[in-house]
Image (cartoon, rainbow, N blue to C red):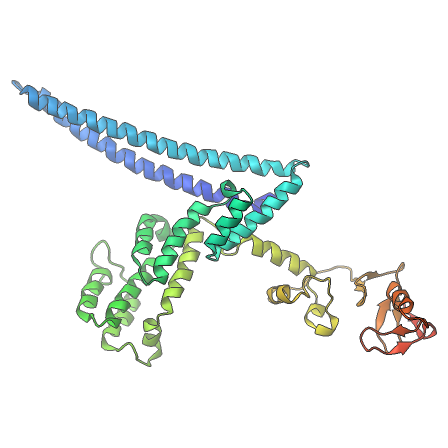
Length: 389
């Protein structure tokens, strides 16, 4: 159960957050339509309270009331269908997670988990086409959150094209949640829009834009005094300025920073960790096997995952494995050296397991032992058994 809680958090939290948002949106829509029906109903009451009301006028108001009621009914049904769809998705995923305890389905379940981890990693890092291809090939679209990241794909694509419109729409639709997260994404996007106006030489338009969004007045204004000073000072500089503070603001690489910030904010919006499950699992496994020997070329082992060139780089910032009991591993065979396979020392000081010495001896016709590290030749009589206290 602990493993499920640790690794399958995103499997349920994303559809739950989507359901929560769907419910809140539906509530706003229904409340708005109910207010329309109530207003129209009040008109009908006023008309019916009068004497000698024209039939055409009364029929018109009644028709309007009926129309409003039909709109309310249709939108309520649509909202209900959406909520049922999200609930069904959550129920299916809960049922899928329960299959983990079924020994008959365990192998297939673990295979699906690995593929889900890969899809999640691809989606988080912007490899959307690869994620979709893998999910379709393995028939797991219902177990991964492709739809959620499809919106992210559109936002990222627009930011890379230096178009902030879709990103600002996303910020507006998630305004209350982003406010709770104390997000600065919208502010940074607004600053970038201002910078682009200045870079294009449209300084008057930039000034109007600044008054609208950086003055602290009005519903759309984002008032941050320190930012105001820095941003407004851009009007006095050319895009090719060498002053670092303003040179950084004029730098086109800021669009890539916005993409990175959006990815983080998007994950935080759904209570997802900054690292993918695949990275967490890999790092946990590597940390449990990491030793100082893994970072010395002469002491690396072929069958050790941490010694692998690709994993070695990933393992570098991780802590070393904690072991209450030390184990001696043979450099040549990788086997553990113990009372059944004792350590043997060659005259040159290098130590190998007994099984390794036997193997090395059998590789030579004259039963001479070639040291794998120094290529020196030794006879069996020169090998000494060593004891560790």
